[in-house]
Length: 230
Image 1: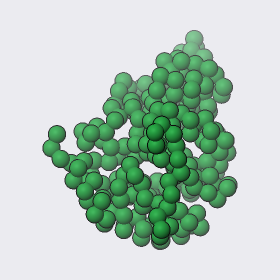
Image 2: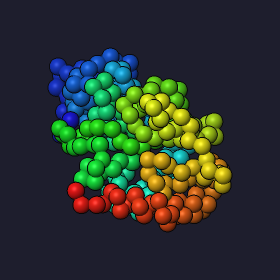
Image 3: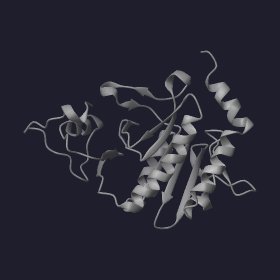
């Protein structure tokens, strides 16, 4: 898949349409030919076109992106991505709102493939669900689960709820908060979230808890493990 600036659609190539059933190769061919396209995903062989987002989505996206990016900045060997399309499986090519990955050189599962598109499975994917709530909670959850995405964070904005799911024996289970109410990632030690503070918009508290996680001994051990000579 080439960059947007080089994508020109020949007349013979039909545009992507919501609900198209396509192979991944045909999806990429049509996507490449649509330089104006903002967001389209292939989920289990079916095309989903992104709709324009409002401030609810944009603000929530910014807050969650702040948390994940801050963690990556403090964790050498981890890379954050925002609205980045991924060749996840032969039938699915999603564009998660956000994800975290261990860099390939640090033992991660993703590689830069043809057209500089990432191939593989990120350790954590996150979606902000407003108009897309049904898709994100059902089909996309199933796609991530079957592909082996270790953790899936789904912020259901209109429900004022955030689900943090962990893959165990091939199935997603809800990550339980610790006794202090903090969610602690299993895939990324030191990634801590005060869910209730996030939902009420108390970002000062969210930031304080995130910094505590980065200072935790398990985070230091994780950084050391990621950066051992290979």
